[in-house]
View 1 (tube, rainbow over the protein chains, first blue to last red):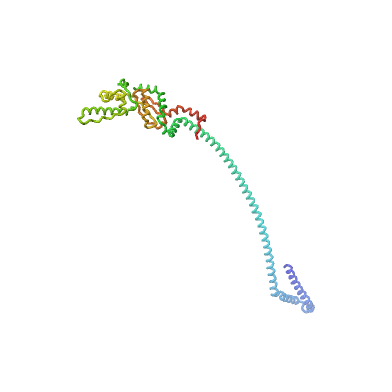
View 2 (cartoon, rainbow over the protein chains, first blue to last red):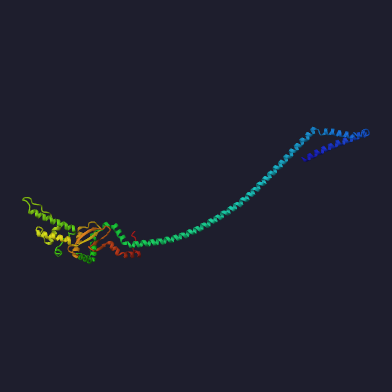
Length: 211
Length: 169
């Protein structure tokens, strides 16, 4: 594109130079012929010719052509730049994505590491706390076990003492409940008479005193 | 009177004050019969009251003729004296009503060993498994199985501690 523009510019310059040379050579011959008669109007003639030729060379079509070419060139440049910009943008986006990925990954890794460390710390703390609690519970259980054993021993001793104190009443109650209705007084006669015989003197004494 | 009552004997079937009261009422009925018979009109013979075995036994043992006024008076006086002076012993058993045979054996022993006119008043002690409780005027004798258990409590405790008493499952 730049090469074409350069060729065009060179072409235009060469054309202009050719025209200028032609104008210079011809007025020079004319000048040589006229110089002798109108040396002061040659410059004016040349100027008029150049203006006329310029108007002839750089006419509207040529200008429109140049404008079109410039527009196309400009559009081409813009398109190329847009493509370059798009490529750069894509590349930048890709790099940005990679960078973001790396940064996010790094950040996430760091955060996960911190999180994992926090979890590990919390886990260790919980384990320590559970161990302490378990130790305390174990101590409490042992203490309660001892207290319970002592209490049970005391209670057992109390029950045994109470049982021994009231043993006669308990056994008597059991006998009454179990076979109370099956004990015949006639079967007890010997037992009662033997007891009466044992207490005979006391009964006799009380009866005699009473009488 | 006390000296005189010692010569009399009460039959074993006469156990308590109720029996004495019953004998007195029978004796009184005979007295009334005799009086009615003495003032009776011709053709109106009053019925002779029936006497119980206790009264017959009492009269027979002590040699009284119930048809004689003197004997009836002496017997009535004897019963009154017994009611007033005879020692009464209170016996409580586990059952409500001891049998007559049992009470007769008991009263026989008491009259033979303690006093010839001894009377028994029975009572109820449901908590007694066996045995009885005897109360005299001033003393209390626990002859129950519970008392026996209590006296021999240490034996059972020792056996329990030795482990020789096991459950009979």
